[in-house]
Length: 139
Image 1: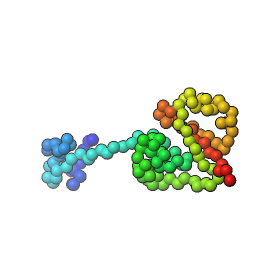
Image 2 (image 1 turned 30 degrees about the vertical axis):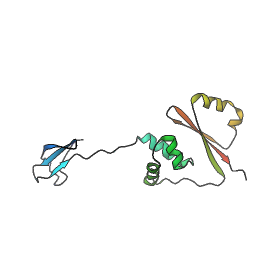
Image 3 (image 1 turned 30 degrees about the horizontal axis):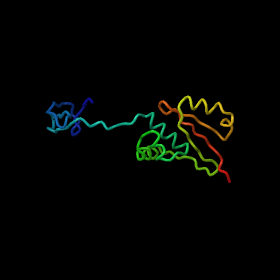
Image 4 (image 1 turned 135 degrees about the horizontal axis):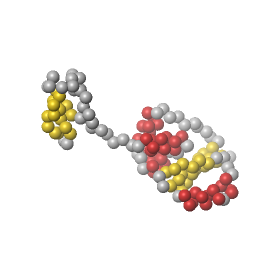
């Protein structure tokens, strides 16, 4: 990470001043302030953020998404809050899902009885596929 200025006085006149906890330390020539490079936190790939939010909108619970993607349910809750995601609430339909590989997916769609229904969506999950199907509640 490039340092552009002192965080205390915004001067661009600074020198290296040792290493602390494997992080470079700097000293501002103008104000004498010591500072280090900010630590870069762990960041999850945006693919997984999008996939988690998509699955949330499809009706899966936080814990189900956690088990499928291997990402903490707390992170998913935080993303839902951060992006202000609201999922539609419906009593008529509920979703079910299956995780299939390519061969199982082809076999599933080769059966005509699986092609009739309220709706199906297929989404990629690495080397597997998730099939989400909506069905009306039996009342």
